[in-house]
Figure (tube, one colour):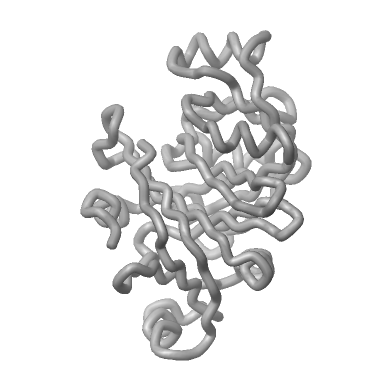
Length: 123
Length: 123
């Protein structure tokens, strides 16, 4: 599970960064908002609108890093806190997790399911 | 040069995401804040405190993607705008660009210099 401070960050609106890479090492980052991220046990659920290159990357290389941050949360050096979440991820366009996100985000074509291996405070 | 709307985003505080990858395809993302990014012609200047894995990745694979976003700027679908900046990057720990950033951020051990190839509005 994510630590309480990380969960607290999700309550302050800010961009979330989702980084993947192609197998030949081309990095890619896409975004969502803190308020769009849902937690289900040790996974993050993120509604996917476009995210085409992210899906393409994950199909051959399922490693992912997600950064969440807020300038409004006290961090290690004063105001401003951030966490780096690493793990593996996949897209689901059917099933209970997809239905749950689709009911809230009607534009979602899939849900990005991130299995969290590690969540470290970086700021 | 970055379009005016992208420059406008930098005036609203929010996390900036900086994505790189190892040559074997391990993605990595680190962050800074919109207010820390400076422009110099077609390059972004970002003060580097830690960013160790970013520096390591760039030493063997100089591709980078940077995401800037703000929920306070009107985007393609209402409030919330974002840009994806792609290019190449390197660390500099001496020279005029480093001195410039170091004078503003005394904790900076280097400046991350991002040469912008493309800047596209994604939101």
